Length: 91
Image (tube, rainbow, N blue to C red):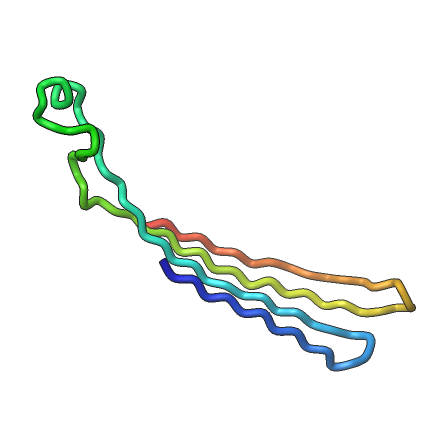
């Protein structure tokens, strides 16, 4: 498993700020195959066995989140933001 995240905030003016958040996550997991009922009853396999124990898949997630905040008057802020996210699954 691999995780990387970053958060950057910029305040170029007293009433304007920008935030950038980004992240990446990579995960690998097993996909063991089913065991036939006949193999369990006959004793050829145990409950913890699998027909394909080395099968695996992976998932990758990444995102970028941007927003800008401006202060119009005291106690009034306007925030505009957006998010881009991508997920890839490999079997």
